[in-house]
Each structure stands twice: as structure tokens, then as C-alpha cells.
Image 1: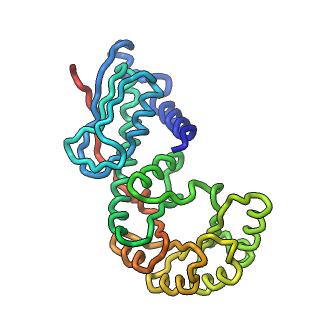
Image 2: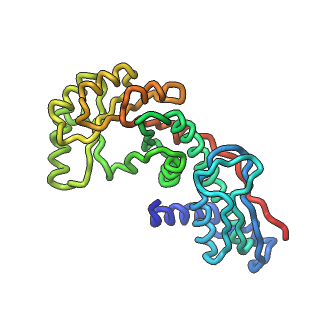
Image 3: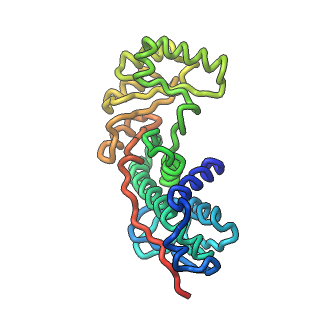
Length: 284
């Protein structure tokens, strides 16, 4: 993960939660009292957010003792423990909810992603996430997808050119959109790759006619598996291919069986259910 982005995310979360002070803790616990806490797993799944949890605690108390009992990507089961932390009680309690919120959300995404990636075992097709993320939390949501075995698509609007339906319609058609995007890349941003969305087989033929050497990947949006197979035949291996739209746990193997390079699934993030975790004081 990008360390600068992670620190900014954590600082914003701490400001949001603590505000002028954690008065619940300040009111009843002396500032110099030290304590220990343990992260308890209360639901089966895939663990994610260990690195983030340690970062959150260390941003409040750099010299604390953080002991990892499991690691990101591990299978977790009810009753297990993920880590212990020893620090000032004020630091533990001010970080408790932020750590839990991040880890519960990330573990839920990683767990759902693993369900999808297990279904892709034996196929060449890889699983992509999307930009359908929670504002200001994308960094951790995409990291959770990676932990669950998925592949991160572009992070934002700046690290890849993706010409979607609205870009194409506003620009005046696939041919114009490709030509203009390719000229922009050549003159101003040579490191950028271009992906273009197609809505039917005629669109695919247009990309073949004008996009070779310019377009890296063709998105086949809302194509049925049979249409994917036809599109792959037209594209003839000259482009990376991505199936998108309506792909779920029930039909993902049908899409993978076509030989498409990628399937993108927004539900990895926006349909994931948080996993139950708790942070409990250890009384010594």
C-alpha cells in the first residue's frame, strides 16, 4: 500500500473519531496507565487488515508492542486470536473502533473475494475489482481484494484511460474516442494504457479496425458467455479482454470457460458483509 495515502487515511479517521478528546477514557483512566488487548475472531473468513491495525496503533504510540498471531490472507475461524497489543490504555482505547472498523470491513471483502477466486482455480481468467468503492476508503478496500486473491484494476481516474460508454457517446463514437485518447497518450502521458468498453459485437469490430497498437484492453460489457466467445474470436488475441456486468458467484465459471483474460466484479466491495471481530482488554 501507498504509505502516504495510508497515513492520511488513518489521520483523518483518528480526527473524525477522537475530535477534541476521548473523554470516556480521559475521565476515568490515568494517562500513564499501560495495558494489553487482544483481537478476537468471532466469525469464520479470511483475515485482512493486520498491517493497517498495527499502523493505526503506532501512529498513536510508536513504541508499543504489537504481536501478530496471524497474518493477512490467513483463514480465520471463530475463537481464534489475531494479535495482541501492549501500550498506554489511552492509545489502545482511542484506536479500538478505527482498528475494528477497518479490519471488519477489509476481512469481509477479502472473504468474499476468496469465494470468487476459488471458483476461478484451473482457469486462466483473473478477477478484477472496480472503482465502486467507499469514498476515502478505496485504499483499504482494494488492498482487501488483493489479500483475498483478486487483482486491482486502476486505482483512480489518473492511472489508466478507460473509455466507457459515456466517454464514447460524448466524443462521437468509438473511432474518435480511440484516436483522440491515443494522440493524448503519445503527446502527453506515454505511460498510460488505454481500455475501451464495447456494448455489442459491432463495437468490437470497430475496435479491431482502429485500435490495434493503441488499445491495450477491450471491456465486453454485459455480454453473455456465448457473445464473449464470439468477441474473442473477432479480437483474435490482439487485445487483453475483460468481461464485466452481471457476473456473480453463480455464473463466473461460465465466463471463465470462454477464456476471457479478466472478469471485473463490483460486488467484491459493494456487496461484501463485514466480519465480526472484537478487541478485548487482557487483565494481567
